[in-house]
Amino acid sequence: MKRCVILLGACLLLATSPGMAHRAHFSLTDMWWRVDRSTLEITHSIHLDDAMVLLASLGAPDGTLDAAVQAKLMHYLERTFSLTSDGDPLELEPVGAQIEGDFLWLYQELELAKLPDQLQLSCQLMQDFSAEQVNQVNFRVGDEVRTLRLNRDRHAGQLF
Image (tube, rainbow, N blue to C red; front, side, top):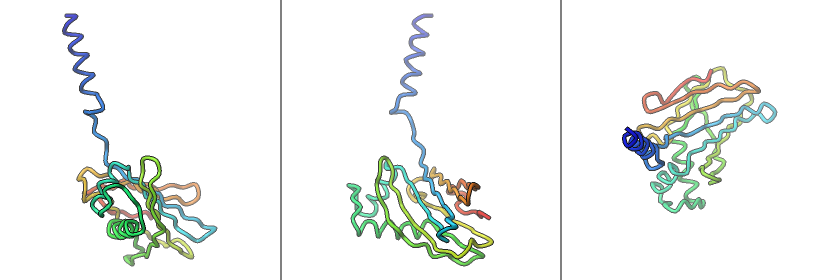
């Protein structure tokens, strides 16, 4: 009996070892309406493990973010993240990209005199690399936060 308990404990330790763990494919997009600046600020964060796959596909396997790679990242962002209002696309301005800590950060902004009555978004970040990719979008206006969780089956939604 004692041998069986020890064997069971060893099996549980092996099954929960870091080598057996599966890290989720997840990105986080935060959108802030800055009423004092009439600006919608957008920040996307992608875990560096996933970002390295993206960067390699753009010709930067070492993770270097020179001007050419940043331009390619912004083009990728234009293809995989968009906002529309009443069916009309909103032109997001690229701000830049950086690697900090364990994340690749991508920045965009949009100048608006006021928030539109309706705002729809499509977010397909990293979905061309992983079928399990989940993208969470948080939209902040003052103290209010609205959240959408999107995936390959549901990559678009309406914020309001």
